[in-house]
Length: 177
Image (cartoon, rainbow, N blue to C red; front, side, top):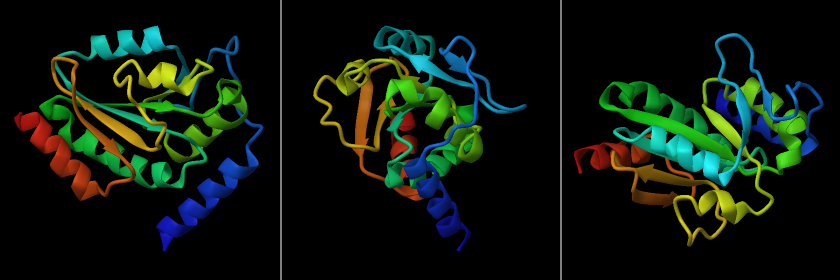
């Protein structure tokens, strides 16, 4: 029951957009205390972020505020990251909303529903520019989640929403590989 209320509110917020939030110089917006900030990220910056996580299993999630299946799986991904962080699992999200929606839509949405989710908003106009960092053949399906091995290479591409148990199984298998 609570989950449906959350999704209804999230979808309504995404559809209507919001006007809350502020950015510093239009590039990054700070979240509330204890929450992750969200900022714009270019393809080269994403490549650098992923390179900095070498040695860990990276779960890279492409999502959007208007994507209902994305909104259903993000809490599960955050939970799995919390459970498996001691085993070297880290989660990075990239919102595929329009770059100009940082302060008007993405930051307020992120702060309200997923403040613990380390995420960025694409700064590239073309969707494919961000995805091509890990997958030149990405077909613009959301949600798409990539499991990147400790060497930084894609171990698995997961398209469409998955359950907590499905993600746990896929990530545990990738850890064992």
